Amino acid sequence: MIDQLFEFVQNHPLLVAAFLMVLAAWIFYEARNASSSGVNSSQATQLINREDAVVVDTREAGDFKAGHIAGARNIPQSRIDNRMNELDKVKDKPIIVVCKSGQSSGVTVAKLTKAGFARVFKLKGGMAQWQADGLPVVKK
Image (cartoon, rainbow, N blue to C red):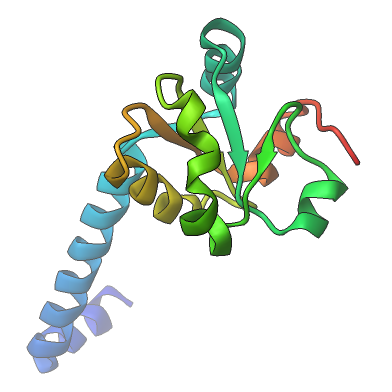
Protein backbone atom coordinates (compact mmCIF):
# COMPACT_ATOMS: atom_id res chain seq x y z
CA MET A 1 0.00 0.00 0.00
CA ILE A 2 2.77 2.45 0.92
CA ASP A 3 4.62 1.52 -2.26
CA GLN A 4 1.58 2.48 -4.31
CA LEU A 5 1.35 5.81 -2.51
CA PHE A 6 4.99 6.63 -3.28
CA GLU A 7 4.51 5.57 -6.89
CA PHE A 8 1.44 7.82 -7.19
CA VAL A 9 3.38 10.77 -5.72
CA GLN A 10 6.24 10.19 -8.17
CA ASN A 11 3.91 9.87 -11.17
CA HIS A 12 1.66 12.86 -10.30
CA PRO A 13 3.76 15.55 -8.58
CA LEU A 14 1.58 18.46 -9.73
CA LEU A 15 -1.60 16.83 -8.49
CA VAL A 16 -0.02 16.07 -5.11
CA ALA A 17 1.39 19.61 -4.84
CA ALA A 18 -2.03 21.10 -5.63
CA PHE A 19 -3.65 18.86 -3.03
CA LEU A 20 -1.11 19.89 -0.38
CA MET A 21 -1.62 23.58 -1.16
CA VAL A 22 -5.40 23.27 -0.87
CA LEU A 23 -5.03 21.29 2.35
CA ALA A 24 -2.70 23.91 3.85
CA ALA A 25 -5.06 26.74 2.84
CA TRP A 26 -8.04 24.94 4.36
CA ILE A 27 -6.19 24.28 7.64
CA PHE A 28 -5.09 27.93 7.81
CA TYR A 29 -8.65 29.14 7.12
CA GLU A 30 -10.20 26.86 9.74
CA ALA A 31 -7.57 27.74 12.35
CA ARG A 32 -8.06 31.45 11.77
CA ASN A 33 -11.85 31.26 11.94
CA ALA A 34 -11.89 28.98 14.96
CA SER A 35 -9.93 31.44 17.03
CA SER A 36 -11.61 34.61 15.82
CA SER A 37 -14.32 36.02 18.05
CA GLY A 38 -16.04 32.75 18.86
CA VAL A 39 -17.29 31.59 22.22
CA ASN A 40 -18.40 28.15 23.30
CA SER A 41 -21.60 27.47 25.24
CA SER A 42 -20.08 27.89 28.69
CA GLN A 43 -18.34 31.15 27.73
CA ALA A 44 -21.61 32.42 26.26
CA THR A 45 -23.45 31.53 29.47
CA GLN A 46 -20.86 33.47 31.49
CA LEU A 47 -21.21 36.50 29.22
CA ILE A 48 -25.00 36.38 29.54
CA ASN A 49 -24.99 35.98 33.32
CA ARG A 50 -22.08 38.25 34.28
CA GLU A 51 -22.10 40.97 31.63
CA ASP A 52 -25.74 40.94 30.51
CA ALA A 53 -24.78 39.96 26.96
CA VAL A 54 -27.40 40.29 24.23
CA VAL A 55 -28.14 37.16 22.21
CA VAL A 56 -29.06 37.73 18.56
CA ASP A 57 -30.53 34.65 16.87
CA THR A 58 -30.13 34.90 13.09
CA ARG A 59 -32.29 31.90 12.20
CA GLU A 60 -35.64 32.30 10.47
CA ALA A 61 -38.76 32.81 12.61
CA GLY A 62 -39.93 29.18 12.39
CA ASP A 63 -36.63 27.81 13.70
CA PHE A 64 -36.56 30.52 16.37
CA LYS A 65 -40.03 29.59 17.63
CA ALA A 66 -39.08 25.90 17.72
CA GLY A 67 -36.45 26.66 20.37
CA HIS A 68 -34.08 29.50 21.23
CA ILE A 69 -31.91 30.81 24.05
CA ALA A 70 -33.90 32.64 26.72
CA GLY A 71 -33.97 36.38 26.07
CA ALA A 72 -32.66 36.06 22.51
CA ARG A 73 -33.71 38.55 19.86
CA ASN A 74 -34.70 37.11 16.50
CA ILE A 75 -33.16 39.09 13.66
CA PRO A 76 -32.85 36.81 10.62
CA GLN A 77 -29.56 37.08 8.79
CA SER A 78 -31.34 38.17 5.61
CA ARG A 79 -32.73 41.23 7.46
CA ILE A 80 -29.76 42.22 9.62
CA ASP A 81 -28.91 45.25 7.47
CA ASN A 82 -32.42 46.70 7.83
CA ARG A 83 -32.84 45.88 11.52
CA MET A 84 -29.38 46.67 12.88
CA ASN A 85 -30.69 49.89 14.43
CA GLU A 86 -32.63 47.73 16.95
CA LEU A 87 -29.28 46.94 18.55
CA ASP A 88 -28.05 50.54 18.88
CA LYS A 89 -29.25 50.72 22.51
CA VAL A 90 -27.04 47.76 23.46
CA LYS A 91 -23.92 48.79 21.57
CA ASP A 92 -21.86 48.85 24.78
CA LYS A 93 -22.84 45.29 25.80
CA PRO A 94 -21.37 42.05 24.48
CA ILE A 95 -23.41 40.59 21.62
CA ILE A 96 -23.54 36.85 20.93
CA VAL A 97 -24.68 35.92 17.43
CA VAL A 98 -26.35 32.53 17.13
CA CYS A 99 -27.24 30.57 14.00
CA LYS A 100 -28.23 26.96 13.43
CA SER A 101 -24.80 25.33 13.35
CA GLY A 102 -22.26 28.12 13.85
CA GLN A 103 -21.35 28.35 10.17
CA SER A 104 -23.30 31.40 8.99
CA SER A 105 -23.08 33.64 12.06
CA GLY A 106 -19.66 34.92 11.02
CA VAL A 107 -21.26 37.07 8.32
CA THR A 108 -23.44 38.82 10.90
CA VAL A 109 -20.48 39.21 13.27
CA ALA A 110 -18.52 40.93 10.50
CA LYS A 111 -21.43 43.28 9.68
CA LEU A 112 -21.94 44.25 13.33
CA THR A 113 -18.22 44.78 13.86
CA LYS A 114 -18.08 46.98 10.77
CA ALA A 115 -21.06 48.97 12.11
CA GLY A 116 -19.11 49.83 15.26
CA PHE A 117 -20.16 47.18 17.75
CA ALA A 118 -17.07 46.55 19.85
CA ARG A 119 -17.71 43.16 21.46
CA VAL A 120 -19.42 40.80 19.02
CA PHE A 121 -18.99 37.04 19.31
CA LYS A 122 -20.39 34.05 17.46
CA LEU A 123 -21.58 30.97 19.30
CA LYS A 124 -19.36 28.10 18.16
CA GLY A 125 -21.54 25.25 16.99
CA GLY A 126 -24.66 27.43 17.06
CA MET A 127 -27.95 26.22 18.49
CA ALA A 128 -27.06 22.64 17.60
CA GLN A 129 -24.13 22.74 20.03
CA TRP A 130 -26.14 24.65 22.65
CA GLN A 131 -28.77 21.91 22.64
CA ALA A 132 -26.16 19.13 22.49
CA ASP A 133 -24.63 20.59 25.65
CA GLY A 134 -28.01 20.18 27.34
CA LEU A 135 -28.54 23.89 27.91
CA PRO A 136 -32.10 25.24 28.18
CA VAL A 137 -34.13 26.55 25.27
CA VAL A 138 -37.36 28.51 25.25
CA LYS A 139 -40.16 27.65 22.82
CA LYS A 140 -42.72 30.17 21.63
